[in-house]
Length: 407
Image (tube, rainbow, N blue to C red; front, side, top):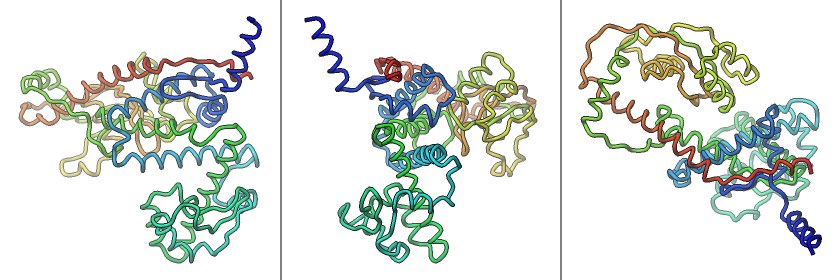
């Protein structure tokens, strides 16, 4: 009887398929894990990758609790993250398959590989794309044939935002043809990603959490006032303060409110947020900025800088101040000389401030009331985020089975 019971349990498990990670926020299959490891964390151990996946799931959960799914910008940001992931996967798979980098010039190679042909000339047909997406049922209008079958306009433009389609239609002549080639390249990249997923026996929906977690990171940064407006257009979590709280806080931080003659700092931009977080943790333990940053050389988006002086802009020229200088000055102003990584255009900015030279000026609360409230809010929300993140991680009820990877 025990043997039969064991056999039954084994067969039941086999039918369901084993998961590397099971949680209340979703399950990670062997194929999904390999996809994530290959694309994002090829040098990390499986155990560390699991911890990073847990963090991604926790970030998404926090963002959902604070209304990410209902936000009017969510779907556009989700599409941008999905496109970025698909391009990354396509590049990786192309390199494995053809042993060279994927570039726009490879469109012809991909067209042949996927047996792609047009049933009508694409450029004169472009004026129908926008109306087709809006008015015609999916699958009713075809103009592309691939080895997977016929492709509708809706499918061909599935990874474009409405505003991108409008831009495509507004162009004429050579410019329109060039943009159409970019759209074609994106579609072919999505087919490469699909082939890669088929090889790993996974589906596109298995990676929805990755795209959502990437959006959640930006969304949480804005909601918890961890960055200035502009990264994700949503208001921070509201907090009401009693006037006495603000006044006491003013006296606590007033020395830091004095203007700077200059600050001394080091900076680097890393492509991966988790690399940036690891660097920040090392700096907070007292390790050398230059020595630690060099460990992430492959992730550089901005080369490691030697300590340098940063001067505030002259009166009337504040709008001309370099964005990275503003971030460094802000860190010095708040007294957080090793701030958390900040999302910027090309990755995540890590700053360490070493010294400041302040102006000797008298200040009044009335002149800094907005700054005082802003900084107190950021401080409280930063503490709240740590609590929320810990709660979210615990609520995952995660169960890990790395043995699945050996099957």
